Length: 136
Image (tube, rainbow, N blue to C red; front, side, top):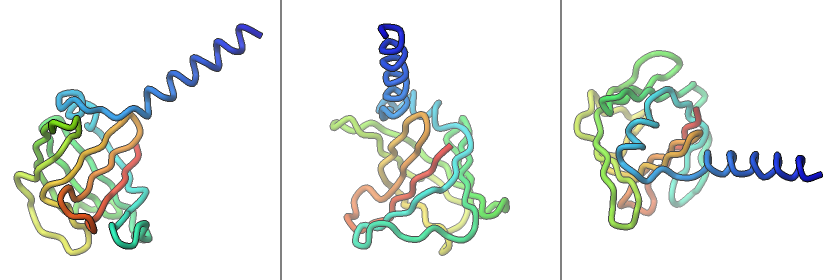
C-alpha cells in the first residue's frame, strides 16, 4: 500500500513539473528549441477557431530563429527575442521576418508561455488578438 502511494505521488510530481510554466528567459530559450505542431488557435472575441486543414509546424533553433512549415513546405522565417517582465511573464518580440503571410500571422510582440510539452504564443497588447498553441 505504501509503495503504491509513493509511486502515485512520484508520478503526480513528475507530471506537475512538466506542466509548470518556464518563466526564466535563459531556460525558455533552451527548452523552446525543437519541433512544435499547431494544436489549437484562439481569437479573443470568438475563442476557439477551427484549425487549418493543412499541417502547421514550428521549428525553433538555438539562435531564437523560427520557421513555420505548412504541409512540410517552408512558409516563413522569423527571428525573435525573449524578455522577462516584472510580473514574471515572458514576452517575445519579432526582430526580423522573411515575409508577411496572410495564411499564418505571427504577432510582432506577444506572450510566450512554455512548458515541457506546450508552447503558446499570441498577441500581448490586443484583447481580441490571436493565440496559437503548439505541442511537441
